[in-house]
Length: 293
Length: 293
Image 1: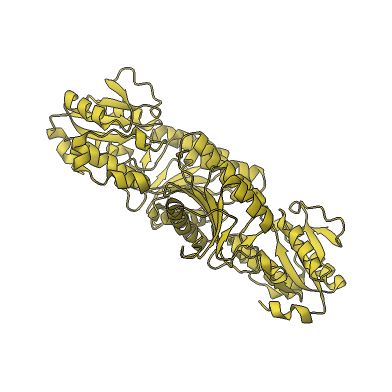
Image 2 (image 1 turned 180 degrees about the vertical axis):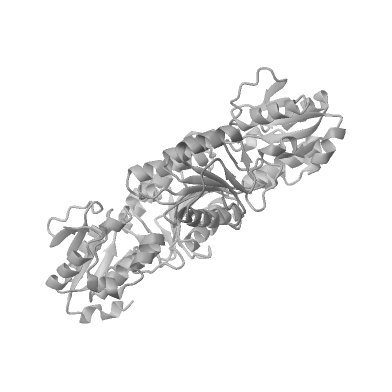
């Protein structure tokens, strides 16, 4: 979305930072590209140390403060980065009267929306205040997974069947705006990601193997796909070194992510960890093709 | 499936008993109907006390012993009842050469099947040995959920939206032969049942509420549907008093199950527990209709 426009931009880049390692990574990469990012660290979410960056700590629902700050800082582009684990509550949302008038869908969304609806609402609210929302991958293009392997290992024929089974499940979930991740073992989908997140799902798979409810003799794979209807300016599915560690602890053979629509954080550390644990990491198409690694 | 034939049957009823309370419940109900059930308690699965019933403890893969026992006991009808948590491994399966010749799909199934494929294989193997596999509901018809409420409480309009969201997810999962259960809170599906089972999924929802990752101010519902392609002689989805306790602990408003294709164990205790906890229990159609309670 207009990554080509960035060099001409006169305004400042802001990063609304949720939980996890991604926001700090994006902020550092943006700096290396000559940006001076201003950080809105979300209270109760952001867990990185923002010392050394110009930043404010604000609640996700406090749009009045956020848009005021953006205007004061001359922000014209905003990246939403990191997980927002706690869905905002009615009482947390404090839009200005002006933004509320511009965004009549806000009430309906808060009442009924899935994750995507909430994200679309946040994007609408920010854009109503005058800044443009862009994807993290537009600031740091090399975050996106490519088609093919990362690291030295490649999936076996059995792993490819697991990838196919997990892709089918992740596609079905994504179409319902439920989740992005699935684990298949021995050709069978054994775990689906809901609100608990990928790390918790991997811990569950590890426990099911210990318990004998999943064959510990078969390895299995984690697949993460972008939801088909997801706004790519919202946080794309991502993996990082901790995902590799979780997959290894669950005895998986590897991880497949959607090429072009998923982020790989700290790619060299991911490759190193995967090589050490004997896991493959593969960028695939959502129809299961690609990645002849 | 030929429930009408039962009174004419001359042979004995066998129950292959997996984990949980259902098999014992079925065995007692069968006795009340004049049967003298013979129990095959699956080793590492069955956890009921079978004192007072003619029974053997056998491994799920030991078809040679199972079919030999059936012949010795004059068994002509078999009910599969209770959960089989541990998927049989290659090394556990010991069919006779005779049954193996009759069931060429066994190898393919073991390599790749989902739960349903494994169940179909078990049914084929039993029927190859001469007995007929019937559903628990054919022996104890009042186990099946009806359309409409059980107990005193009824879903609100908000609960009905959660039921619809969870039905959509459970249908998508079931079509993939992945699972039967889903939990929706505030119109959003937050948990999907994989190999961990309903009780573990409900415990996860409770933890996510404590953690603030699901709104604790919204209640939500559990939905369990039969997989669309499921052989109804295999174990149908079921709920019992412990499901009500788990749903209450997760702060849910109620439970919806598929009318005519799900079992309600100990219905009076379920109703009593639901009334006490303020939960609704509702039999619904898989298209979300029915159950105007």
